[in-house]
Length: 316
Image 1 (cartoon, rainbow, N blue to C red):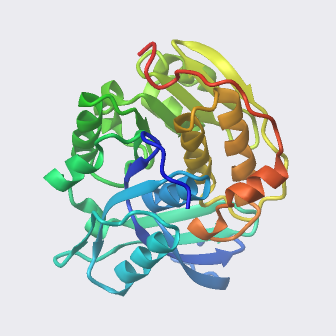
Image 2: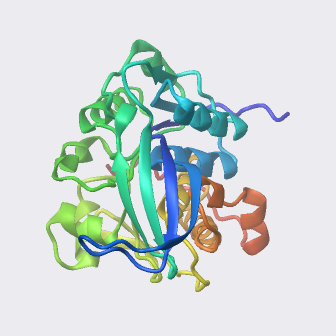
């Protein structure tokens, strides 16, 4: 077994949900019942999905989260352990149920999701969790956990010089409370426009990159824009592929991109690997199960290694 390199571990402060996924032709209108043609149960939640993506991209991962003491929680813990993710600080809360999500996936690949937070609503940050961020390469969060908790986690990381990565979804006006503690912001077009208060997507990304270290703007079937200090520093072309399910595509992209930067890869290589991974992800059904392995990404895109950049500590 290869020894873990210092400073390469990634801590995910995130949600874990049991997803009930229904495939259907279209969404129901108010008061209407529609037929689905497939149902499955999946391990999901944006935090768990990103942790799985990071692990499959080759990162050692620690997951800081909350589940209930129920069968759903048992299933989620089993998923994380199977991926080799450290669950030492995955707490089973006896007073809350495990978070869950109802995911409607349409036949064209688009999705609609209703999340019931359950144990993910806990905003407790303990000394054990504080110790877990010591000496790691990155702390990653989304907005399916309480913003005060994320701010505490990011502040702990900032005090010891650990880079912070934020995926601001589901988007909330309160996300601005986190920008001063965020080094890399990964988001989509709608999120960028809402947070920046700017109707034009590129201008929104430019504006946000004046507030955080780096902004990574995914644009679906279009290219990914990466901005820094108000300027576009890289544009990664999209991959044109048949789309089956977009549920985990954003989390897959985030995990691979973060792993690239923590491993010392440059922006372009990190974005290329992340884009390739996401393009494989959308061709498969499911939540965390749809995320490809690093070998699959390498087979799909054998692009060369770029030079390393000090992306995470400069020009904040």
